[in-house]
Every structure is written in structure tokens, then in C-alpha cells.
Amino acid sequence: MQEIDQALARVYARRESNNEAPAVPPAPHFVVEPGRPSSKEAPGLDWPATVKALEREHGDRFRRLADALVDVRDSRGMKVVLFTSCHRAEGRTTLVLTLARALARKPGRTLLIDADLTGPMLARQLGLLPRAGLDDVVEHGQALADAIIESPDDHLAILPLRAPVAGPREFLSNPGWSCAMAKLRREFDLILIDGSPLFAGLSAAVLHRSVDAAVLVHNRALTGERALLRAREVLEAGGIPLLGLAETFV
Image (cartoon, rainbow, N blue to C red; front, side):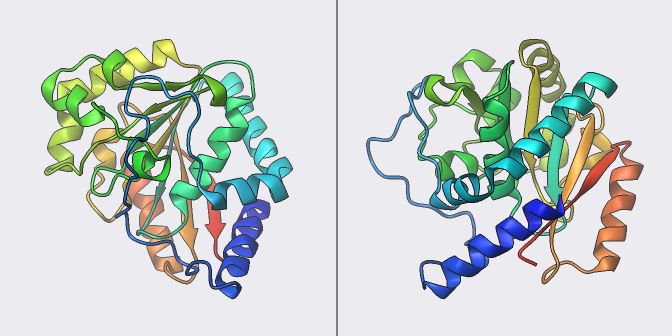
């Protein structure tokens, strides 16, 4: 994990020095250009420049992390992994996206779910305009097949969230959530969940019924040791094993 931490730090430091973007990613308010894919199939996703840079310069490290997740799945049966953080702007989504590209090159089907219930970003980050999303599946009973976007060129499937959820706890306790996750387990070999920050509406006590393990992403400048200890306690109380910490922007 620390190798990836250092890679993220170097890329964002370079972007800041070139005045391309601030070291901390912006809040999840992106403008999606007209004409972006909005159907159930996208020939190729519009990957963020930061993800491409990380993959180009440190792809071997993400491949090793991908191998580790595959090993955990095969040896311990953990195929649904939650990526969370204590707060926003800690680099969680960037790490998940880069890791997803590495996993997509391995055998089997990989699904990336946007479950950041208070600030969904994946569709915006990938330049998608989804007609349906996880919110429609859980709250309105729409078919999963209508919400999952397959990208053949990327060998990856995306289940976006179209809008923030008004009541995250109620959303996760909805039978539609557990039913959807049960179906996805049968259809995919590995599922990465880009989740909400632990202290921004995520109910780990409910999530444990659908999640096998978690990776806690954190930025040392934003999150101290006390917050990390509290996050560990929240995950433990929710019955979610912690696979490890991923430190970003060191």
C-alpha cells in the first residue's frame, strides 16, 4: 500500500508544481460534456489524466495490489471490497479507478460500483451520462441490466450512482440493496465499491451484510491517528475486516 501512497503523492505534487490542479482533488461537482456515452454500453471510458499518469508511471505497483486482491478473493472468499475514507478529498476514488484498470486486465469479470451515497463521482469522472443507476435499482426496482454500463474496450463494468441519496441509512437497509448485491455476487468475480466517507453518512452496521472487507484510504494532512482509530472501530463494529490502509498525498 505504501508504494501506491508514494506514487499518488508524487503525481499530485507534480501537478501542483505545474499549476495544473490543486494537490487536493476538487469537490464532486464536475461538468459532463455533451455527447458523452449514456447507454448501457460504452466502447471506451474517458479516464482522468491523473489515473493515466499513475498507471503509466507506477502501473507495476497497482498490478501487485490487484494480485493481492485476487489472492484474498481466492484464498478467503472476499470478492466484494469496500474502499472508504474518514473524510472527503483523501484520494479514494483516484486509487479505486487506477486499481480497477489493473484488475480489468486479469481473467474474470470486474465491477466498479459507485456507492458514495452523499457525493457520487464515478460517472462524472469517467465522462458518463447514465440513464439509470444504483439509486434507480434500489429505490425504484429498476433492473440491474439497465443500470450497469459495460465497457468492452476496458474489460470493465460500471454501476453508477446518478445522484446523492437523501437517507443513506434507509438506502442501505432497503431490501433492494441487499438483493442487488446478492445478484452481483453471482455475476461478477470481483467487485470494488467506492463508498462514502465513514463520517459522512455511511452506515457500516448495515453494509456488513453485503461487503466482505474494506480498504481505508487516508490523507495524513486531513486525517489524524485518532480519526483512523475511530474508523477502525466503526468498521469492526460493522463486522467488516480491514485489509489495510492506503495513505495518499504524503
